[in-house]
Length: 402
Image 1 (cartoon, helix red, strand yellow):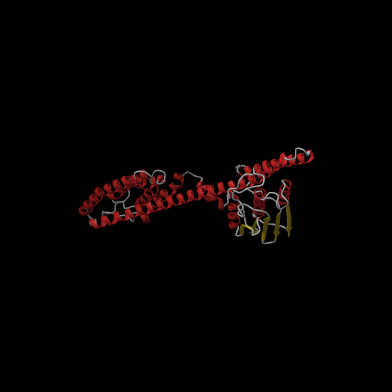
Image 2 (cartoon, one colour):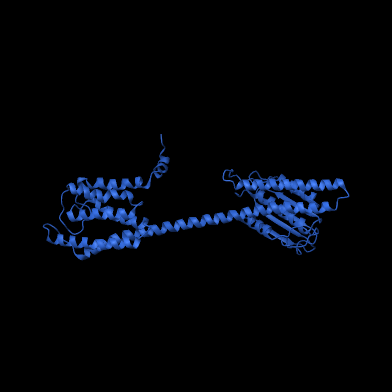
């Protein structure tokens, strides 16, 4: 059996014409109910007339075109208007007359082309109808007759239906534009996030490989150390390929939506790689990682990665200390490096390096890290120290969603 919760979804799968047809059928059926006959819309004051064969045609012409009120609003309005004219000129005064304002509202809401022309033609067609009804009402026996003011009032009521439909159309278009804008902003944010991830992965690994390769040039006379240095370059390159492959997997629509968060143990691997590149690093980890740290683990890893990359670039060979402190509510990271730093303590900007061949920084890394930490509600700072070198600090709340 189909559950009631699935009925709206199943109904929306039908074509829009099928979904709009029941309204017209309902109004048509109600028009033939004896209690409602001759109690519908009345313009012109003509005396009521019993239904005949022509009434069936007129009422059907008024109601059934509502099935195409969204797919072909101009056709719907034309047919409903014709049926309404026959209804009023013959004096049926059926409940089906309510289909006219519905058709006008639908045309104002869904008509895309020739909107002004449609409104003008409808207004022009109303004039001869009003004149004919006015004359017939004045000469007919039992008719009440109506003044020109009554015809104008009815026309203004129909105009309000068109205006309301236009307002609905404007709101729908504004909502569509808002969704497009949100989608574009989302795509831009995603491209920015991917650019940051690529920067973090490529910059760190390539910097380590450049430093290791430069060191290998001076170890040709020491085969054992040369082999170790070249092995380190190879291992770093493989890790770079692995990280890039994981990042590109996230761009694959068939890939799972779960983001791969580096475990805290990867920070130790990161420190070891930096040591093998010739950078003396002291690593301290306090506390146990929270069970549900959210994206805090990933951001902490990126902070350490960017800080060690800057240390390799701008203070190669100078002591570096990494402190990672875990608690239930947050992760605190502090990376300090002795030495000249980058432009006297401006990490992340282009500056001299002892090797002379390390790629210069662009500031993208630290800027991206500051935004990441801030989004999670944390604090981030990167500044030079008075005695030389620089220090990077980050407080990252745990448990925030990625």
